[in-house]
Length: 262
Ligand SMILES: [Zn+2]
Image 1: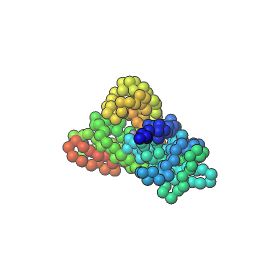
Image 2 (image 1 turned 45 degrees about the vertical axis):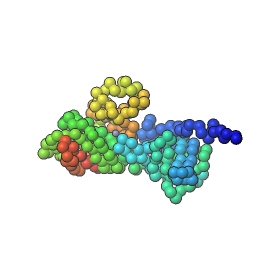
Image 3 (image 1 turned 90 degrees about the horizontal axis):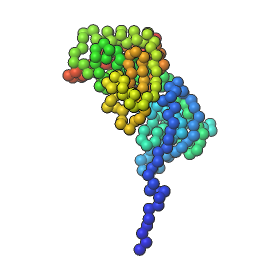
């Protein structure tokens, strides 16, 4: 009896498609040219549709910042992008009603500016808040999440002074007005973890295989290992409002933040 042999190609280990992440280097980029590396049309076992590009500025989500929305334009056709799936590949998720660009298509990618810009202001606002609360109260961040313009951040704080809400809001807006620069840099792991702020905020969040760490630094106020997108200085955040302080249990305080215009 003839034994069927496995054919190499069919059983080869899956090799992920490499997408160059443009937004990690240039957070102001909103439009770029790209080529389609991989398409899934929904006929697979998972039924998912998706597009993988060689270059993408769509923030895929992570660190509390939700994914970007936008479009791919190709040959007079528009494919709306409503999310990103992160697995082996960085898969852009198209709107259910929109056609998919075939493999190899040259596309123009565009990130929806209003949503992304507000998420950048909101994300930078959260870092500013964490810097202020650590500096003034010594409290550590235990969690956080954001939508465009609103966010929450959780702190490990045993007691909260009665004027905490108004005092923190005022201190945050002093730092907005100070227009501190927000710098992004890439550091070798060992160098990054020599920075006390990085040890405090990120030791358990950066996987051991990560050799180069992206650092987001609000100069003189807050330094974190972070993959998110940020504005270039604190004044660009806009005015911050502390909407609410919630007591979620022993030593667990939740600060709800809102980004206001001017
Ligand atoms: Zn962050």
